[in-house]
Figure (cartoon, rainbow, N blue to C red):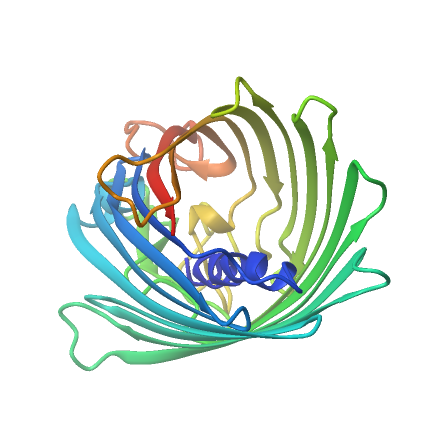
Length: 377
């Protein structure tokens, strides 16, 4: 989860940097998000407001809430259901000088046993007749990890992310992109509650549990390419590919295709498909032969070998908001994704009565809904 949070923060930061030469429009976005899958429900609101001044400066502020209710397979097999709330606040600043944009932002998220502070910095420039945009990015994070019911436990994670992003207008209809990032983490990188299982003939289940142990360092590299093809009737095709590898021997491939189609001047519809595949971490196992089998132990399903398929659609409707004259225009957006997760070497321990290691492979489906309204002022 720590890496996912870090990557999400950097990806959220990229669009502002990639738009060098032009500051974002004055805009407010209010969103409600919902996730339901694998026994986990997450929902909550978020708000983002951006405002520019003198066409050179822009500031932004954001607020985000996750209300989590979890009875996931990890929880129901080794612990009890829990509920918690995570809140995140963020501020950002951008300065445009000629064709160069300087940007900085800071965010802080808090929950019962995890606090994260993240600072992002970037510099981007348009060049070669404004056909090419190059952005350099840096993110610095520090997370504090504690464990409920254990006041003696406290640890930290230090994180640095370095990135470069290049956008190239190849023709009047084709835009290409390339990005590379390195993620370096050090500290307590595993979940303080999760346990691994090992074969134990003395236990009636045939296996016992012990806490996970991860390496205290991790370095990952990701390479991504993208293409946008704009069709004559205002429609667009999109293709993306991303390759990731790290020092834990995880390799992943992500591919996505999308099509956006205007139904009329105000209504736009899009569909997309995403495929994800990864190999397992070198120290991962669903069932270790004995207790303390090796120095590092993991049974986090996110470090297992897995595949996922995502199919989704989105609808956007632009309108003039009544009784709000300070908004020049507004848009109502609905996005829905259906995700199918399939694990190759993570077993479903809710199925009992079978020999350890022969339980069915775990799989589940998830629904993701995002409903948000945007206003430009």
